[in-house]
Amino acid sequence: MREVKAMKISNQKKKLLVNLSLAAFFVVCVIAPIVSMLCRITPEGMRQVFSSPQFLPAVKNSLSTAFVATCISLLLSILAALCMERCAVAGKAIFSLLFVLPMLIPSISHAFGLVSLLGTNGSLTNLLKLNGSIYGFWGIVAGSVLYSFPVAFLMFTNILQYEDGMTYKAAEVLGVPPIRRFLDITVPFMKKTLISAFFAVFTMIITDYGVPLMVGGKTLTLSVLMYNKAVAMIDYSSGSVIGALLLLPAIAAFVVDLLNSDNGQSGFVSEPVDPRRNRLKETFAFLYCALITLMVLAPIVSFCGMVFETKYPVDPSFTLYHVQKTLNRGAGSYLLNSVLYATLTAAFGTLLAFTCAYSTARLRFRFSKALHLISITSMAIPGIVLGLSYVIFFHGSAVYGTVLLVVLANSMHFFASPYMMMYNTLSKVNPNLEDVGKCMGVSRIHIIKDVILPKVKYTLAEMAVYFFVNSMMTISAVAFLAPPSPKSVALMITQFEAQLLMESAAFVSLLILIVNLLVKTLMALLRKREKRLTA
Image 1 (cartoon, one colour):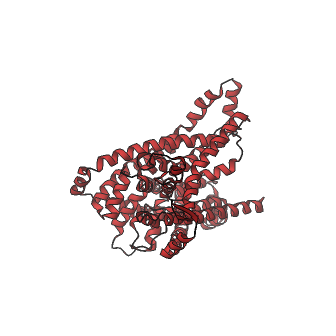
Image 2 (tube, helix red, strand yellow):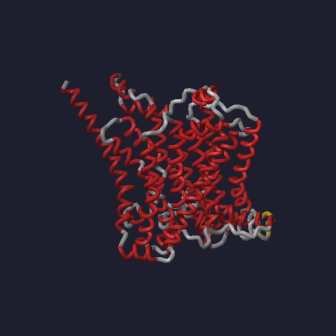
Image 3 (cartoon, one colour):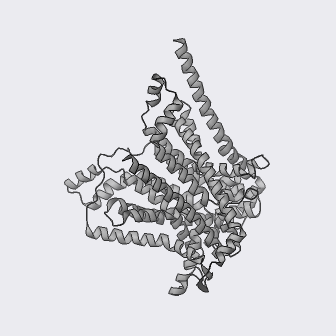
């Protein structure tokens, strides 16, 4: 009896040690940097920011562009998700793939595409003899919609897959018209996801500086103002003030998501919704999906075409001069830096996310809920704010200016989503596996290695790809860390944009897109092969 009690106490101590170690890690790598940034706020810095003639217009521009772009993005993504999940539309798999293609390139690349299409000398501007300008309010809105649409689309597609078709059938039997079925069944079902998506997309847009930096023109936003203060002018005090303001919508989104998480819909589905065949509805859905595909692909194809034009926009003849020039300026080595960062981030981030998710979902210790809350705090921190806080907190330390700090920043920046993937997956695995293993004399390590890891291998792969792809294209967090760290290839986009080398910037975007597409394709092929072997 004493031995059993002693073993139980020992296990409790081990669980506590693991949880406290992980919590301490997040305190050092997330909370402490943010606190150090907030401590850099001075009365003088606040006066400089709040008294600046640029401040109030920047606040107004940020709120207005983010709100309008969010509403448009949500409307387009809801209709696209309904077409995918509620209509037997032709080419559904292809459309679903193309809709998320913008997630594989930086936000500033979408702005490049808009400039090449609708800029002063854009191809569509010249072809259609347009008099308007893409620069300014509507340019930011258009670029932000392209940037945020895939995220909202995935959120709505995911929730619609879990709607119970039995309710629809019952309403149909009772003679409820289709429009009433949608308003009374689907809309309430999607309510929480709609709220979460609004705050998530709004936060993405208001904290992004890639799009407004490229197509904002005279329409200054808070994110661009912070970038100019902290990166261009190295004014960390003023940058910290603006960073604190940009934390507010992110924290609001975090709180809303936290409140919604415990009250969400059940994941149990009695019967999936079966789309009824309707020629008119299917035709409309196909045309709408084709229009969205054109909206998504046109800017990407346009900036890719710029790479091989002799001189944009006056001489469209084919050339490889810009490819060679960009490679001669170090794009190849910067690309290798990015691949290294992304690979290390994928490895470290996936390992850390799995460890945290296992600890919070499977160890069943009273401190687990607190660790879970700490683990998702990075969701409330925009990349531009995290980057500045890392510069302030780690400056002068042994890791400052090294690959390790960039990998750490990327891991924390993108940690929340992969963590939640694994947390939800592990929560569905039989909770008694470890207890059964203990009764049979099998250690927890062997249960994890031989039973749990094979069960969650697809989720692990998705986590690794998520870390890799986002690390390849991120600009916001690493913009503050390089130099002195080896520069990633995505940062060359802003460098070439400042020098008006549009073709070189487009080639860098194309390189990132190709690498991310190769990784996504390779993972899809490996998963398909695995399913075929196990069938």
